[in-house]
Image 1 (tube, helix red, strand yellow):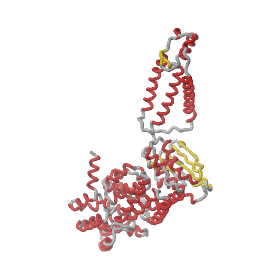
Image 2: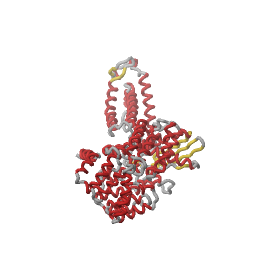
Image 3: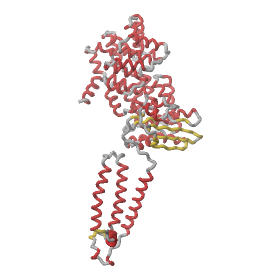
Image 4: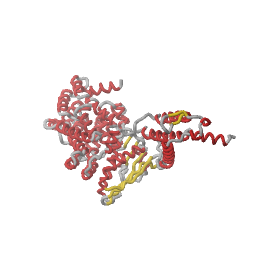
Length: 601
């Protein structure tokens, strides 16, 4: 057994040489360094092994510091001296510790105790997440507990804004769109069941209640598998401060799921879309109108959206979303279901998108609008492909965008990528076309049987059966569309479909009348691309001279259907003709082929 006297003497010697105080100060500093490194490793994108390296270096330094402090000491009068053995030092010569050493050791002791307490008690409320799970999130539409149905629009708009902020964070694996979650509004299903149906690991559920000038917003981030609340918070705020909440909630989701956020993206999320509450409320009114317009190809709300967006700009000229909405309305008015010529609206739309991006470079709608112009008008397919790489999650922001990207992949010949995009009833007929071109007609028919063929969808399904060269079935769906009383039945695309189905089922006189009316329309306007669809019709029936005549007019008119020149079966009979190759090169297809070939090398 050790002699107590010897232990006491050793302890006194440690104190005399200030080894105890050095250990205390070193430990305190080490705790601070480790805590700091743990907090900055992820935000600064440092390697994962950085904290481990720091701990190893501090551990190596510990014995070195102890040895150094045993041998040397800092003299009270300044400078470093070698410590004499105790038997060579007289009592009156024993150096007194400087006040700085005492203060440093006291502070270090307090720091150690504080950090230990923080790690043990302060973080008990934090739930450790399973970092192996994909960062896939669905934000459910906030429940309106205000008793005022007029607040439903604000709840939907609040949800939409949080989703759009999450789209900006590239480190999320998936963020579900507003349209995806709307089907579960007022659903009796539990969080776990909703998450399973949406194929996500995390769900944000919340509520909103307005009482006069006060607003109470609650939010909970839930890990669906274990039905665990990862984070929750209440926001009892003055109503006008609601503009700050969507960004804060999005950042809380990202922080709690340990998603990396670049400084630029965080700045974009922190930035208010507007400081004007009236403008903010106008923006929330536009959201449901816009979603209905683009998802249902319904131009009914175009004028209302345009009016609201212009009102918002009059109140706040820096409101980026309003410019993006105006650009989209211009662009959709020139698409096949619109009432304007694409070549007359595309450049106005581009101007609006650029104004939006000047005010918010991460405005996803404006970026998407520019990508659509690249695809429909400029035929710069490389730009749209790169957009898909830059903003992959935004393409699911509503089913119309996802449908468009599926069609882009199909039109460019990327059939396997097109069929890998998650299927949706809204555009299953578009995926079916990719399967047809892959030679998997059985799967295509399955999708077409399951497609939503109520009213407007008869037209899309009918065209898909033309691709299958099942013209009797195509005619059935196209004629069913005639009874729907939808404005879509009068557009050139479906007139050409109907004319071809009639021609292929030996109703030649009817086919001539329909295509004759389409040619007359081409002489007066390019709205809806009548020249392109006339050329498409003649390609199907094997009259190349007439097909090329009308296709040349379509190119001059900037018809947004030109990207289909590459894969549409209508043009198979033309592909050996030098005129086809000339059109192919002039409309961006060869440039895209060369680009993809260079990527695959």
